[in-house]
Image 1 (tube, rainbow, N blue to C red):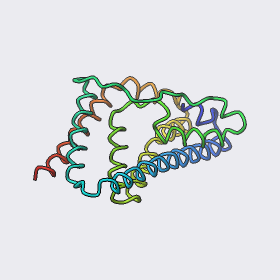
Image 2: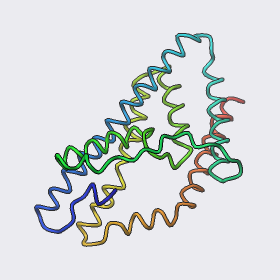
Image 3: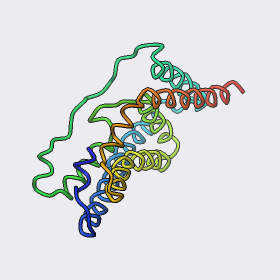
Image 4: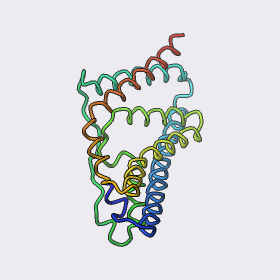
Length: 203
């Protein structure tokens, strides 16, 4: 993915082109994630209208329980089916315009649901956007924008490595080689979230 986002080569012209493409990709990622968060938030508002008597404390308990279950999945203690489309963004999108292609890549990948979902915490994010949207649509949009921004960071890291004269796929190889570690860190984060949510429900 890094080679699609950033141009190979060195020099002021190439660095400028990289910066533009990464900015467009990251903005596209934020846009895609925010638009999908809007949909989740609207679903949350709809559910709130249908179930106005549902206390938010029970929603908190449900999110805490799911965070714990997702943590067990990340640790491979339990097996849950991966609910994902698994579609890959076509390289043909780059043919008309690399700038347009990078933006479209960002929008689709930022939404998160059209391609592979490597971490179970993404499902919790969607549920969080739904529950947040029931109270504040702006809160759901903020969650989406934050996710979209961090989804664009790998391209930024790859571009920086090119500016430094390094091989960009080294970063990708390093991330993949430590995939088990990222799942473990994700699991710990989910356990912390679960403890916080369930603790607030009990107290």
